[in-house]
Length: 191
Image (cartoon, rainbow, N blue to C red; front, top):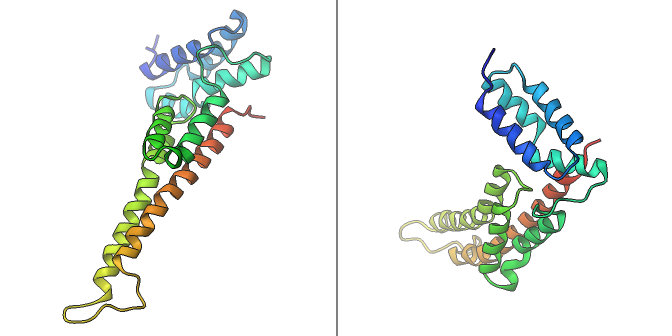
């Protein structure tokens, strides 16, 4: 008898926990079906197959929706995902900086998004600001050489620095809308 890889055991346990509150027969059928798909696979193949299957929370949400059951208490709903996305998009405009921090905290503590989506949501708007500052530094260096006056046709360094103050909030708005679209796609049942 081959030993079950840890990744499979963890995934099945997480799926079983996510299905808590569903009728026992349906729960056992779903977990049993996934267990069957992963049986006999080594850790690498099992990890690849688990990636294809998706997050256990989403599988449970799809199973509940197919059964007509509401989301279990204590589990985030689509409303939670909307609130988190809107806080990322607009929170910093309402309560500067703190609004975005709260929104990103909700995203990181939520189960709706995958880790890579959380990382993108956290760092993409900041990367836009850093990019503007980098372009500013390059423009300043390129606008004039030693002993030359600045080229009036090229933007000054402060123009890019000021633009970054507009680009970062715009980046958060776009990121919040992207998170909302990802949440909607994740929680929608697959045909």
